[in-house]
Length: 269
Ligand SMILES: NC(=O)c1ccc[n+]([C@@H]2O[C@H](COP(=O)([O-])OP(=O)(O)OC[C@H]3O[C@@H](n4cnc5c(N)ncnc54)[C@H](O)[C@@H]3O)[C@@H](O)[C@H]2O)c1
Image 1 (spheres, rainbow, N blue to C red):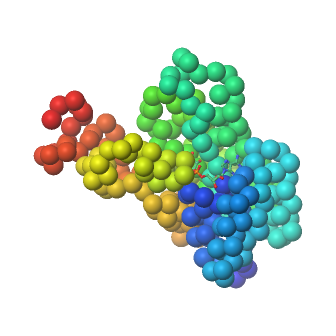
Image 2: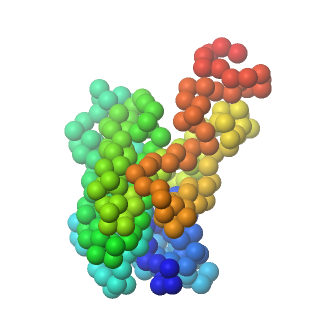
Image 3: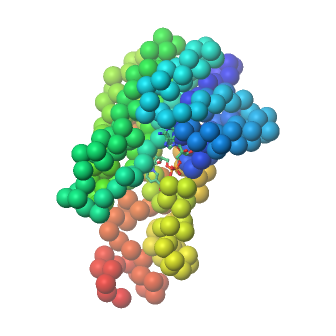
C-alpha cells in the first residue's frame, strides 16, 4: 500500500499496547494512540516522534462514549483507518472466588474487557467497509480457553472477545475487513509485572515452569499483533492466536524443578 496506514491502538502507552503503538509507528503507520494515563501517553508519543514516527494522542478512558467519539474524530481527520487494535482489558477488579464477587465488579469487568471493544469496532467499522479494507486485532486471553479460578467473569468476557472476533470476521470478510485476536499469557507488563508474578520466588524457576522458559516481553506480543494487522496475514481471519510461551499447549503440565521431565501433580517431586 503506497498510502500511509492509519492505526488506532487503545491503551497504547504502556505494556503490550505500548509496544504495539511503537511497533506500528516504526513500521510507518500514523498511530492514533488512546490511553487513560496522560503522562504515559505523552512519554510514548514523545518516544515515537523522536524515532521519526507519526502519532496522534487521544487521552481518556475508552470505556467512556465521549472518548470513543474523540477517537473517531481523530480518524476522520486522518481520512481513513486501516488497523484497529482493541488492546484495553484488565482482570481487576478481582475477587478470591466468584462466590464473593459482586454485580458491580462484573459490570466493571464487562465494561473494561468487552463492551468498549464492541463500541469502538462499531464506530470505526463503517469507515473500513467504505474503504473496502481494514484489519482489526482484538485482545483476548488464554483464560478464554483455559479455566482460571477467581476470574470467572473476566474469562467469560474474554471468551466473548474471541467469539465476537470469529463471528464478525465471517460477517465482514466480504468487505475486505479481517478480524483476529491475540490471547496473551504471562507478559511482563505494569498489569502483571514479573516481580508480582514471582512474589519473591527465585526468577530462575521460570525456566522450569513454561515451555519457552521465560516470561513474555511486550515486543513478543506486539510482533504478533503487527503480523495479524499486516498484509502478510491477508488470508487469516476469525482466529485468536495464543501468545503464551506454550502455556496453553502445556495446560496443567509443569516442568519439574529437578529437570527430570514434567508433572501434573505439583505436590509430588
Ligand atoms: N499481561 C498479561 O500477561 C496478559 C494476559 C492476558 C491478557 N492480557 C490482555 O492484554 C491487554 C494488555 O495487557 P497489559 O498487561 O499490557 O496491560 P497494562 O495494564 O500493563 O497496560 C494497559 C495500558 O492501557 C491503558 N489503559 C488501561 N485502562 C484503560 C482505559 N480504560 N482506557 C484507555 N486506556 C487504558 C493503561 O494506561 C496502559 O497504558 C489487556 O487487554 C489484558 O487483559 C494481558
